[in-house]
Amino acid sequence: MVLQNNYRNKIISQTKTVDYFQEEQRLKSKINLQKIGPTFGFNNLKADWLFLNFIQYFGDKYARKKTGYSLTSEYFATIINYDVQFIAAYLTLANANTMYAGQPEKSIAFIEQILNSASPGNSSQLYYLLWLYKAYDELFFLGDIQAAQFSYSQIKQWSEQEQPNLQNNITANYFPNPEFFNTNPDITQAQILAWSTVLPHVRDIETQQKIRKKITTLKSRLVPAK
View 1 (cartoon, rainbow, N blue to C red):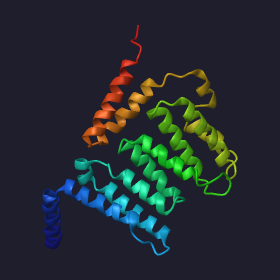
View 2: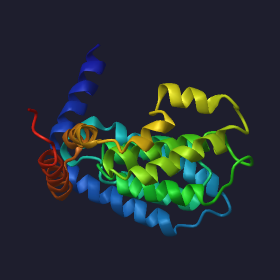
View 3: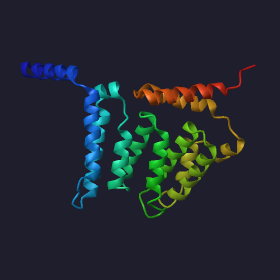
View 4: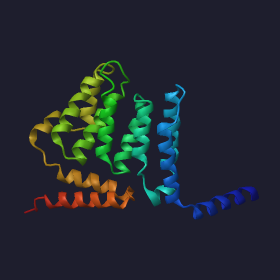
């Protein structure tokens, strides 16, 4: 018990003295080195290792409360370069990059890069989920209904090879019916909610300001209730 208390006190003391912003810069430099470091042919292992580093980074709640999640995009881009088919990791990274780093535009760009490297029927069935994530970001963050409609239309094509009934399940449980896109929907309220959900996680001042500006602009479009 004494040893446990001593260890606990040591950890608490270290936590109080850590310069999280300096640590953030150290991690960024480390990621930059990984972009040019040799893999000796073990690209997949390098991607695995980087993803484990990201999980450790994301899970450091004390640091993230101070510095936020701004390095998520760096991890995302670097892992793609080593293993573009690491789909299970990209589902986590895409969600984190949008919902915690506040960078849906980058999430969409990364997903497009991944999807451009594959085709339906010859890859993991999880690819259809990337189309779903992309559609969500396009609709609820960018407000691009046309782009979201296209992404949503791809889910069936990319899922029916593995699970023919999957499209119906997605339609019923995870996304509006296809007819939704033909109704010229007003998604302003949904966009305000989406950006407002992200804002508490963002610590970067510039990104905070951009999100607040987006929310203000969206609120100005609301039609006053009669």
